[in-house]
Image 1 (cartoon, one colour):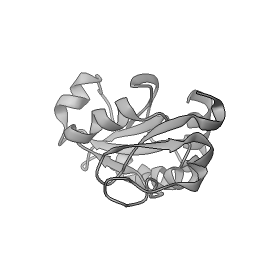
Image 2 (cartoon, helix red, strand yellow; image 1 turned 90 degrees about the vertical axis):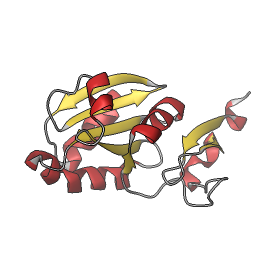
Image 3 (tube, helix red, strand yellow; image 1 turned 45 degrees about the horizontal axis):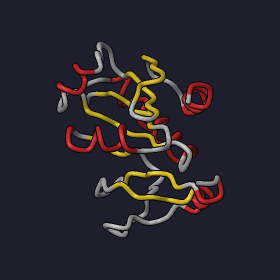
Image 4 (cartoon, helix red, strand yellow; image 1 turned 135 degrees about the vertical axis):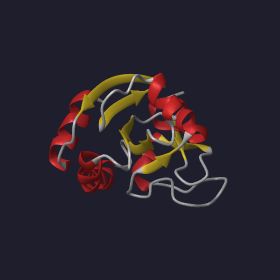
Length: 147
């Protein structure tokens, strides 16, 4: 397969189906072949136990996960910056949020001990981790330097 015809797997943020998108058409966004909704919504994807492994394991673009909880003040204060980073980073990165209170098994699986914790996954593997809240500019710099 040549670079001109290379396809990337992109997981739909709505129905979580895996779609193939030609690499050269990634910036065009595209729509899901299953549900017909946009593959990039410009906002973080809310993950749960059923969708976490699909997004992290099947996506060919890096997935940045914000491990957070509703009772966490720094998590709530970082939410607008994380949303802004999602708008800026798609379609090259997928930003997602996982509520560690609701999904304790996943948080335990990744040894999340403090929140907010951000982790970047590529090819199903964690490649970087950062604890603590960040503003949008710092978040984008961190993502670009690690992913």
